[in-house]
Amino acid sequence: MTNESLRESLSALMDDAAEQLEVRRVLHASEQDPEIRRSWERYQLARSVMHKEPWHTGMDLSVGIAAALADEPELKVASTTGSSRWKVQLGRVAVAASVTVAVLVGVRMVNQDPAAENTMASVERSVPAAGIAAVPAAPVGAGAVLAGFSSHADPKAAVPNSEPSAWQEQRIGNYLRRHAENNAQAAPQLVPYARAASLENN
Amino acid sequence: MPRLKRVLGWLGVATLLTAPPLAAEDSSQWLERMAQAVLEQSYHGSYIYERSGIFTTQDIWREVSVDGIHERLLQTAGRQQEWVRHNGQLICATTPPLSHRRNPDRGSPQIIDPRQLAEWYSLRTLGGTRIASRPVTVIAVQPKDGFRYAHELYIDNETGLLLKSLLVDDTRELLERFQFAAISFDKQSYTKGLEPSSSCFDVEVVDVPADVPADVDAHFWEPAWLPPGFTLGTHEVQALRGSDTFISSQLYSDGLASFTLFVEPLGRDSLAEDLRAQLGPTVAVSRRLMTPDNLFLATVVGEIPARAAERIAESLSQAVAGAAQ
Image (tube, rainbow over all chains, first blue to last red):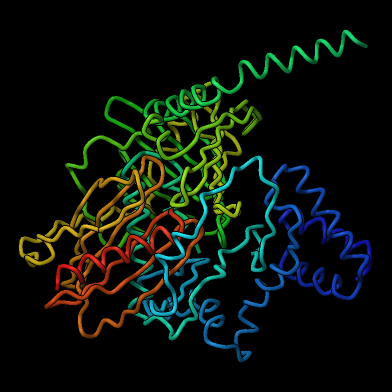
C-alpha cells in the first residue's frame, strides 16, 4: 500500500467513511510507521477543532478501533477469558438463544456479585457532574467503537463470576424494548422514537 | 487606540450586566417553545441517530391535524423498516413488538416543564449555530447531581423544534447524538409520505387477561430510594405473549430523563443473576428480590447513570428484605 492511498484511507477514516478493510490497513500501517501515526494524530486534532467537540480531543482512537476490530467474528475462536469474550459475543449468543429477539447492537452485560461491589458506597463518593463547556477534556479510555464514541467501559465493574443465562439475556432485550416504547408513548418526541427504532436495527 | 480600549471596556461591562440574568430566563423560554413545537409543528425531515454500535438515518413525515398527530418514520439505510404512529401510539411497524398493550387512559402527553426541570438541572444558553441549514439556539441542560445525564439541545429559532440533541455523561463522554440533516415545512412534502407501505404490519393489541395473579396485579413495588425529582408516570401490568408471566412495569421521569422499573416473578427454570447491561445511553440493572414465599426479578432500565439505577434496585431489595423480617 502506497503512502498516498494510506493517507486517503486515513482521511476516510476520519470522516467515518472508511471500510473495515481500510481501517485494518491503516491500523497495521500506523503500527509499523510512526509517520502515519503522526498524520493520524494531526487529522484527529484537526477534526476535533473543526467539529468543536471537546470530548474527542486527546483521545487516541486507534486503540479503541483496534479493540473494536479485535471483537470481529474471525477472532472469536481465539481463547479469551470469560468476561471479555462474553461481552463481545453477547449479541450472537442472544440470537442463538431466541429467534424472536433480534440482536441488540452494542449491548454490554456484566454479572454482578453484590458482595464484591458496594454500589451504595460508590454513589456516596461520586461527585456531581461537571460543566459541559468549561471543563477541559478528560482523557478517555480504550474501547472506542467506529462511530467515534467511547464505549461505556466502567472501571469499577465487578468481576463477572458467570455468564447470564440465555433466559436473562432475552429478558434484558425485552425490557430494553419495552422501556423504549413506554418512553416513546409518553410524549410524541423524536429522540425516544429514534432510540426505540435503533433497537430494531441490525 | 485608547478609544478602542474604551469601547472594548464598555463591551465587557455591558456583557457582564446583561448576560447572567438573561441566560437562565432565556433558556427556559426556549425549552417552553420546544415543548410547544412538539404539539404544533408539521414537517418532513431526515435525521441521524447515533449511539455506541449504532448509526442510523431515518426520514420522518409528521402532520398535526384536528384528529391528532400522525407520524411515519422510515429507515433510509440498510434494511427497510418503518413505523407509523398516531398520537405517539404505534399503529404499525415492519417488525411489530412481540405484544403490546394499548393504554386508553394514558392521558395527556408528557410535556417538558422548564420550571420543574430547573430544580434538577441548570439551564444555560450557549449561543447560536446552524443545523439543517437553519439558525438554531444551543441550550445546555446540566444536571445538579450525579443521577442524570447532561443534554445539549439545538432548538430551531423560527419554529422551536429540536433539531439536534446530544446526551453527555459526567466524564463528558458523548452517549447519544440525534441530528436533523434536512427539514421542510411544505405541506405537500409532509403529507405525501404519511401512508404506511404494504410491509407495515399492524401492532397486535393485547388486553390484560382477567386472571392476573393477585400477587402481581396488586403489587406496587415501592423503591425506598429514587433520584430526587423522579415521579411515577404510568404503572401497568403487561403480559408476555406465549407465556403466563405477568410483568409489572412502572415508568418514572424527572421531566427529561426516565427509567422503567420492571418486576416479574421468577420461575424455577428461570436462571437469573444480579446483572448490569449498558446499551448506548440506556442502562439495565437486575436484582433478585426474596419475599417470604416468592422470588422476583427487579430490573431498572433507563437513560440514567448506572450508579443511579443500581441504587434504585438495591433500595428495592432492601425494602423487600425489611418487609420480610
